[in-house]
Length: 224
Image (cartoon, rainbow, N blue to C red; front, top):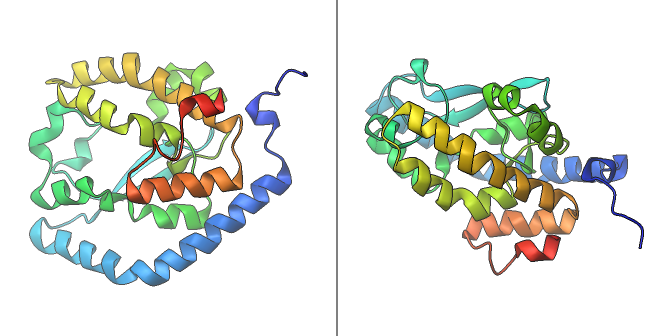
């Protein structure tokens, strides 16, 4: 049996075009259906916490190219924010922000990022520039796929990552745990998924994200 190609070589123009069409179809439908919710959340944040309503963070869509990722603001003092969120930032999460994070509603503005083509529905979570620069070999492989809102690593490792980082009491601890435990494991899952990724598997992951049930839909060994 011929040796499997690296996943970056398996993404042909037809497949990429099909994924883009699927993204556009879903995002236009969701924007039509969810615009009242988007406006309602924005007004709620504005009334309860004030400006800014959105949190804009530079993320990387390739190892060299960054973009402005959009989220609803869930913290105070976001102008001095950096790195991932751990236990050291818990007291900065607003009351509205806790609710939005619980149901991942803070990520709804990323529909606009999908519309622009910065990210896809399914793919590795776009990393901060600092991690791409610290781990260039890892992200050179991971970012062969267009980043996304959800993915195998997001679904399978999200709760573990939250638990690990919530136990960190300082920014230094958060950074150390994220780099030591989260980046390698998430990269492994992202690369594993990309090796046999199809439009059908993307749809299954999207459904799994909505219902927050990944194990009945995917098992890591299926992609080995």
